Amino acid sequence: MSMRLTVVGCSGSYPGPESPASCYLVEAEHEGRTWSILLDLGNGALGALHRYVDPLAVDAVFLSHLHADHCIDMTSYYVLRKYHPDGEQVPLPVWGPRRTSRRLARAYDLPKKPGMREEFVFHRHRPDAPPVQLGPFSVQPVAVEHPVEAYGLRIAVGDRVLAYSGDTGPCAGLDRIAEGADLFLVEASFLGSADNPPSLHLTGAEAAEAAARGGAARVLLTHVPPWHDPEVVLAEARTAYDGPMELAVAGSVHEV
Ligand SMILES: [Zn+2]
Ligand SMILES: [Zn+2]
Image (cartoon, rainbow, N blue to C red; front, side, top):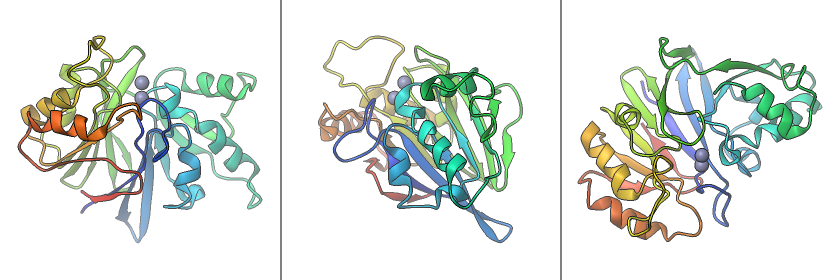
């Protein structure tokens, strides 16, 4: 059992010239078909998603948090599902923080009721409950530190684990997410040389330290903002982790 990660968008905090904002497609075979889930759907990601999968074939969306660079293309996805000429689509399950439904309705300027509830079925992340089971996937949200309610996600298929940090400062939740991951997809938004605010994002070195503590087998650094040189972020990260590590690039595919 394995899964395939496609980086749809990896630009940090806003879309850049080389990539949309955060969005990751995760696919796995199960019972004779390919199942696919999305981790986040940030600015510009829905357009790029068409290159990798039929957007109507996606099985679920998991939103790490409700900052625009992680969720705002849900407004476009709503249009695609609601008005597609193929006709009415089955409401798509979406997991997110509290008030995801209200947040997205407001973003599209829809009335709160029904908002997008006819197109999506909204579920709250429940970090204390057993993982969500969906086809081949088992998805466990873990609360992390960010200025808004935010989660990292551990996605398991069989004994393989893809761990996604979402946006976070260094915290116990981040260490839990990294633990024993086959691939640790971790944000690295800050430079070590800057005077960074606390509980917001990670430097490359902080991301790498969490990977090393958790014994993650491979690291993919993501969410580097366009205003930083990603090679500097990678070089800082290499000081704290000896294993295989690379920068996420839009369109890259990774077997987990
Ligand atoms: Zn972000
Ligand atoms: Zn954020």
